Amino acid sequence: MIAKKHTFAALLITPLLAATFLLSGCSVNFTLNEDSVNDAESSATEAADSLANAAEDSADAAEMLAGIEFEKATRIVVCDPKTGKTIKEITDQTAIEEALMPLSQENSIAITPDAPKEYIFELWQPETIKLGQDESDVSEEKVLEITTYENSDTIRISMTVLGNISFSMTSADSAEALRNLAE
Image 1 (cartoon, rainbow, N blue to C red):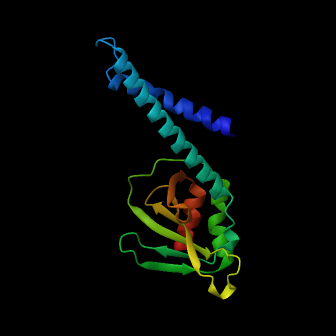
Image 2: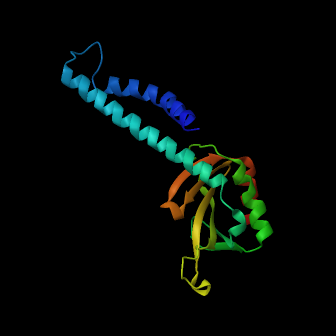
Image 3: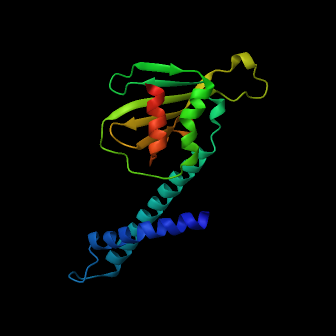
């Protein structure tokens, strides 16, 4: 799987490396010297490493999303992105699982649309009980924030418990299930 990720990243990065060389002054129309070539190589390597890491992080986040146990969710809070006010709070476990189940079938990455935000869904679950901690001291924590966009099948997912790692994915089934939950 890691080799597949690196191959994908390499294919994605190759055209960007070519552009980096052109933008850095490496062209047949200019005089090349060792310093400019080394600078271009250094810039290209940094750009490639950065892109490879970002692609790997996004793929890991998508895989992690597929492994989330939605049955641990205690509630979903639906918010209006314009006002920040709560529209609805869902605590029915069956409704939560049905709305989120399409997410476990997805592992793609997409570009976040320019469309206006439609709904923000906050997924809450109990924090993990630590050794020696009393069960009555356990509070809820927001683990995911999912945003739908008007007239779009693309959703944005922020994993708040992982430092707000965010990515977008296109999933008509997920977007529809979330919208149905909000209405």
